[in-house]
Amino acid sequence: MRAIRLHNQQFQLDHNYPLPSIDKDEVLVKVRLAAICGTDLELARGYYDFDGVPGHEFVGEIASGPEQGQRVVADINIGCWQCSDCQNGRFHHCSERSVLGIKARGGAFSEYIAIPRRNLVAVNSDTPDEVAVLAEPVAAALRVIEPFEGKLPEQALVIGAGRLGYLVAQVLRSFGVEVLVYTRNEARFAQLARAGLDYVDSVQTAEFPWIVECSGSKGGLGLAIDSIAPRGTITLKSTITEPVPLDLQSLMVNEVSLVGSRCGDLTKAKAWLSEGHLVPPTSARFGIDQFDEAIRAATSLEWQKVLIDPQLTRSSS
Image 1 (cartoon, rainbow, N blue to C red):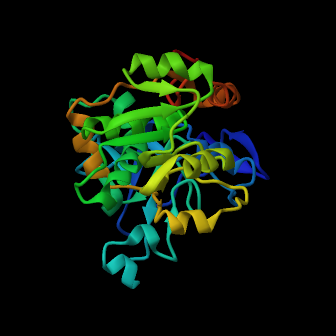
Image 2: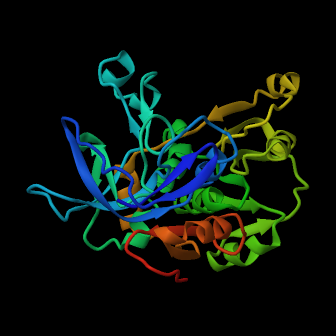
């Protein structure tokens, strides 16, 4: 099969990559559409020592058996299901887990992928592939609200207007939070306005009760710390790969909560998407043979989402 392999931090097209073998309780899934995520780009910069097929945002269809043709998305964390974390439903934190396209398991930048059946979530028949492919990042966006147990702050600042920040802002708005997005990238202004999201390119107040850091940058975290109200919450949504000095005294004195947030529940994402909240991001679509072009598009600011279609022979937008 055709696949994109990451080897020595370089993406390579392989026309004869081995078809995944299927272990017990696994299913062979034909990839219909995959999306390039910021994590995929960071892997090529050495964020994690991964050699194999990347890609974890996708929608596919079961390739064989009685469920053949059923469209599915998948939770990207594959737990051991033997440890206490897995047994108590915390498989996202299993110390022996593999992660689709990121850690010890091939991903979705290929024609086929092998996934444990328990990780699959069926896609509603009225949800198009272009929306279903966003289920994983939408689940991650929805995760930020869970620590509040239904008592959300009235106002939030989202720092960063990239792929994830755009979705986080829409999720918060759908739950009645007054959202302001901070970005200095002028290319993002029209994208945010198109979705009806308020934005600023500078922050003057230090009174936000909730800040979601989606830039993945040291500067973004610094802005969050400078702008959080006493007893406020800073949610870390994007990975910051560089060392960051922290003024722990000010965080302690102001009783600020610093909360990590990672993957979410795909069934909740499925429900949220079916409710029609999403203003889809602008996107460009490329065939798997055009991956170099796709990577260039993903690193530009022209498109919010770059899609890989294994059946496509030329790009479209």
